[in-house]
Image (tube, rainbow, N blue to C red; front, side, top):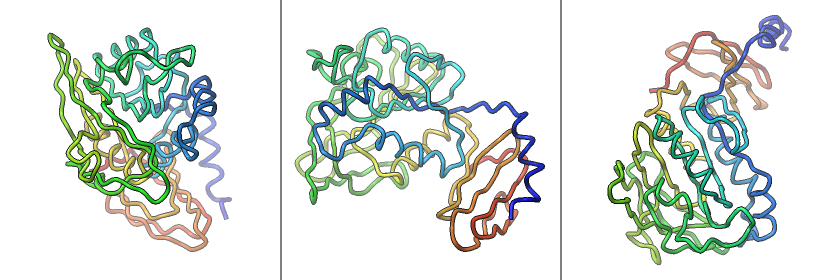
Length: 286
């Protein structure tokens, strides 16, 4: 079924692909979470793949990198569970943000030191000045219990499960920061507490998401953030369609057992079941 596309796909072997988004993956953080998860369903890799799947559904090419990697080439960096925080790493991420980068911190950031000991500093530890908030309380939600969150970001409001943190905005005096509250809890016991913040530092932004998101919630947040960074993306795609960008081409993979129809920038493409279609030129989400 893919024979006509093979010649075009062979060209991708000669194409250097540069991702604009990166997710930080650190095995020491992974092992530390496995030792002390605090919730039986809180998995480091599971949390990471929530963001990865959201980015995949938006057609945003993503690198998985070490926190020790150079961040300067990325417009957005996601630190989904940077549990073990250090001052050198916080300084590095701060410089990246000041220079125009966007960092998204997830729950439980900075909870441990580099030796896996609980920090004595207010959470999120060494990242507190960067995000401009303190974690004042947190709950590991048992099965059947959920909290409600309300956000000014479209698609982000709704129920959350598994883990929630109440945030206390605390901008650092004398620093060039501009903190905005983008979401708050609307149910007890965190009713009216801050749930998501955006902190402008220099030319960039630092976000702290205080709950364990669904894929749809992560997608809504990433759409909001991508609009600030001029990243190409695709939205409102059919379920089961995975777009992958290589060079100026988008490869649309239909993983469904039925054909689908998709419209990209006014052009409609029909893709057979478990087939692929190729479209050219850069696409900008709106």
